[in-house]
Amino acid sequence: MKNKLTQIRNKFMNIAAKPVIMVGLSTCGIAAGAREVFDALKSEIEKQSLDIELKRCGCVGMCYAEPLVEVHTKGLPDVIYGRVDKKVAVDIIHKHVNNGQLLEDYICSIKQKKNIKLKKKIDTKAIDKQVRFVLRNCGVIDPESIEDYIKSGGYDGFSKVLSLSKDKVIEELKQSGLRGRGGGGFPTWMKWKFAKDIAEDEKYIICNGDEGDPGAYMDRSILEGDPHSVIEGMMIAAFCVGAKKGFLYIRAEYPLAIERIQKAIDQAYSFGLLGNNIFNSGFDFDLGIRLGAGAFVCGEETALIASIEGKRGCPSPRPPYPSIKGLWGKPTVINNVETLANISFIFLKGAKEFSSVGSATSKGTKVFALTGKVKNSGLVEVPMGTTIREIVFDIGGGLIDGKNIKAVQTGGPSGGVIPAEFLDTGVDYENLQKLGSIMGSGGMIVMDEDDCMVDIAKFYMRFCVDESCGKCAPCRIGTYQMLELLKQISKGKATKTDIEKLELICKATQKASLCGLGQTAPNPVISTLKYFKEEYIEHINEKKCRSRKCLALLNYRIIKQNCKKCSICAINCPVKAIVGNQENGFVIDKEKCIKCGKCFEICKFNAIIRE
Image (tube, rainbow, N blue to C red):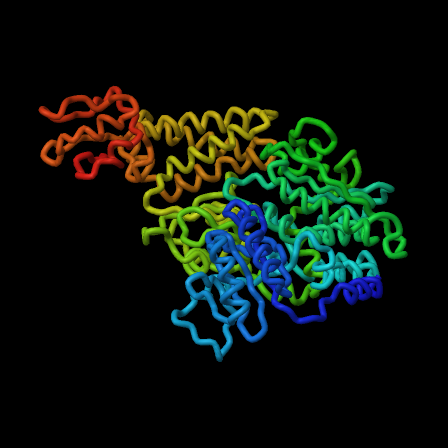
């Protein structure tokens, strides 16, 4: 097989050195206008009959600066331009490519050369602090080109695996220290070994691409930017455990990811990398896609299996675990997208290189979707053990408007809220667990002083109530009752005993729920009660929300001495709650006021205060 890959690589190797321009065409880039930028570049290249290679690529990670264009030209450093529009796209051709002139105002990242002098310093910390194992090809190769993937070393890892025994594959994986990147961090080698050791004619590999955490889009970006790495990871897993069939379970809300993974599958078949007797190795493996309908609970392994089988996506009691008895009652290995992309890297570069980064118990890197009140939102990949402070301030650029950080939420609805006092904690499985949170799939939401912790807990609990399958009473009833108590607290209608009730229901739901959704649903409540209990007490005793997010506790008032009697507030009030006239002035009718804040926003004279 290695000779076959070498032949393919040589066939498609681009010998001529010519300028290369790459446009980030993942969902984030397209939403920001990258297609129009790509078309403008293409039109200008054709207009001038230039010998330039124009390529699409996946998400570089700097989502805050989309659309992104990367330019490689001889004699100049490699540059990534951000916030590019059609006009800037034309300037890139005229000034950068044709005349060797950098567009400094748009540079987001630059591989500096000593002979290049810039008028202003480019901050490269956001890139320099990252280590890209999983995202190694995202923003580097064309995700719709198997040739690009093979040129980058793609499928070499699988080629190596074909010459190893299955036990050797397990041992290499064990030496890497890779743990599942989709939840609690179960050792990947152990899951594979369980399935490998069972004597069954049929076994299955499933890629869990049902990414449902609010604010998380790591899996989507990998599938859009480097689909072949996931396919290769599945092939390695299939060879190791003896599976002949695999499924990629992807939520239907990811149309571009589905399109690109299907193209990658078709290309792999056409190149003889999937199907029967792959490269005369005697190994057979087929792949297909199954679409999820957006149910968060289908991210849980047994619910996902039920969905693929055509049943309602509800969890089942474990044991037996899917590795023993999974899809259609057969041994099934389920890994998420990021885990599988790591596997293709491990067998390409070796377990030693992978385990050389990370912490003592959490090896390798972790991809985070950094969102919330942070300046540079986007995808970041850092070594395990990197502190929260480094991620938020060095890579994320700190908070918007220079406000103070209040907390960071990790792990989505299943995770917890970590207060600012723990910013110097290294992010790994054990450290997050100690703080009352989890790694989860990798969402990281930054919160500032304007965020209310009661409101945050209520948001996640409402999500869990909506997404509970309802099969077990502790989750179905427990999450609903927690939400109702949080609503009462946010309205200032609760008592101190309601906090005690809330804590008791949290514990009961954790212990008695059937699956991970119910067992972890109380985490945001537990963590906010642990670290921000004084806010709960304020809501109850003082009828006050310090962050002014709980509408029922807000009060808008007109200060007569500041009011110019212009009537703008009264005209714009959607419910006509501001009464009076220009002669006698205006007041807010508290019974009618819906506390939308419109009057507060439009008043230019600071005559309306929010209490």
